[in-house]
Length: 385
Picture 1 (cartoon, helix red, strand yellow):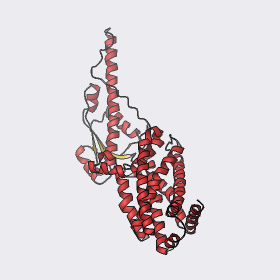
Picture 2 (cartoon, rainbow, N blue to C red):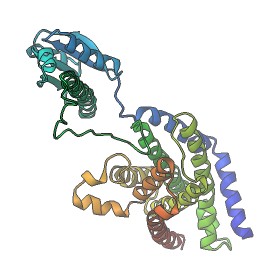
Picture 3 (cartoon, rainbow, N blue to C red):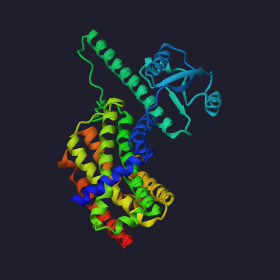
Picture 4 (cartoon, rainbow, N blue to C red):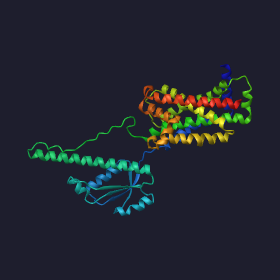
């Protein structure tokens, strides 16, 4: 244990000598979280909209007021016909067009269906889908109010004629939605935990691989290999500092996520720390494995970035739903540690999940991490020999 401690201290001293590495490991993740946390946001507000009100009635003006007061849409102009909205969408002056047909007010007053059309620019698919969803929600709420008003008028008419209440209209269903864990549907709550996973993967996979290769380049690794140190002491001693750095980054990112972005931490911080250690078992093992496959720091950076990190981010479910991927990629994602860590992060942050719920993910991280670290250790010992 004394020899192991000396290797750990040696790694910390070596990190301290590299003045550029400390900001990369501590300040860099915080900057990434702030930048990506604000940028990774699919919530859409103030969607530019062009209005085509062919009815010009009180009912149509009320509908337009619903759109503008929702904060989701901002009217940039108006046209007389729907045929003239295309230049607005082509030139990017508007992303959505609201077309209210003639007779809308008379139809709704008579209890008939009024015609409303929403045209969206589909080149930005996310904004189009979200904008159409907002518009559909507003129109549905107006329609529900019109139905309730019609029922109330019928009830008053029956009561005025001495016939009692109006008979119930068959087929009327009232939908009362309730959203748990993220009631405001803030996409930032979904993405900020993913940023934590990506930052930890960057710090604890790429940097250790480059550090080991750098020692091989300058010849100090060969000098250490001829000392009485055992291979397991050397491996643990070189990886232990990055475990400490990873945990420090985790705590700092959790604090920023809570204070800056308002993401709730409903679960146990102690459980998050324990499961993060299982995740670090995987990333450190992959970093050590990369160091045995390359010969220069540039090769280590390129290999860790493009061969491991980018595919793992794309296939892990952090950004894109795994359910929408082809079957082959869904099966392959089961070998990606970030997939399970992403479920753990969102479960602990948003749902308050405990180990009774997250034990399958913990077991998967333990199994994958043990396998990868064992393979990396065997190759590292062979390279030392």
